[in-house]
Image (cartoon, rainbow, N blue to C red; front, top):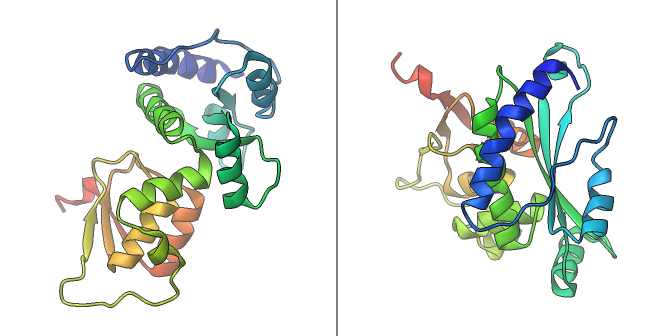
Length: 224
């Protein structure tokens, strides 16, 4: 791992660990696995009977060179009981599914700062453990709690655009935007969102925003 990634992880880990421990979660031993990959987390979870394994992985160099300086945090959730496995299998259409995962990318000084990333990973970990779900299934659960019912999500009927339709939604206090969030915006008829430049937009959420023509306005543009 490059020196900058090592520095990033050293600043991130105390925030992540303190965040989880302060909410009563027990942690296992931090491990270093040279040349490790995300799938290693599954073997660790099985061996240690861990509910969740968090992997900090240095990204491969990309087109702009910044990726070689960044980390991604992968949260690998072990489906711990038959009912949870059944729900995951029904959602994913994958029989015998054992794990679900969530990723927080772009962790470095030019993206998500290490200490902020530690807080975000702790928040995501608690959401996963509390809801017994990760990835798209977790997004669907959180989206439903925002008011997106199964009926709305499955309906092919276009929402009515009325004078009371919400035009702008404020995401300034939210650290990430998922596809579930965007589905709610689409149903509400939102045409513009306010957000921080540090807000993480999932790839699918970004595609949906472009497809629906929803404008992004960043907080540092508000004074202009």
